[in-house]
Image (cartoon, rainbow, N blue to C red; front, side, top):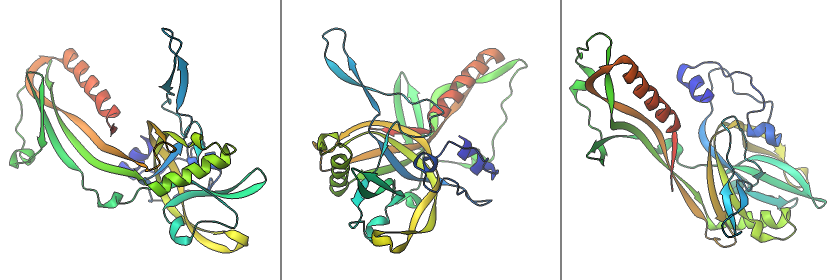
Length: 300
């Protein structure tokens, strides 16, 4: 919400700390966008502690429940890298292009190049669509919305004093379909990550939550194997805009997976029916809450 507000009004991004993946991972944590530059949605990160094991009281069987994030959480419960390569076997320049949030870590006395973020390709080619959903006798019908001259030549509604017009179950929706693909090669990389982090236990290659991130590319000079200097396209101001709960076990699903997202917002349609102000305001506030929660919705 903060990033959308800054972008909408070209406001200055406040210098608030402890809200970025950069700070969590200590990667470009003090680098900020220049005045008039704004991060946008283009990255994703993953974690493996997005679930909790519970015991069913009826039969004492174990089941997995979602670990709920709060509205002010700014990182997965336990971020994990997409890729870990030992020093001497770093990714090539072409392979590095899809990743960000790169850092070096030591595990079992071995240095690894770790990549905690991944770019979402094709974002700038997506064209959102406007739909109208009408509800009659409890049945929804959705189709692409067609504008007319009535949109730019609106007519006044005559409303008696102390009255307002109400909303209907009908809605206008802006929708942008985004696909995140995790390939078989990505799956093999994550299985390798689990083997390193968990002493060879590849069954720990699990993604249990996804963070959809805004941010800006930031070219930096760093190093690769043997201290050789390289230019790497990392990212600054990587903020999580939404969390997605999932369960992907890459040992059992080593062909990868796809996440289909529908991003946008929904606006209620008014009826012209007159009701007292208090009743109309209650309906409008409920619609506003619905719009806020619909900023990012996920289709599974």
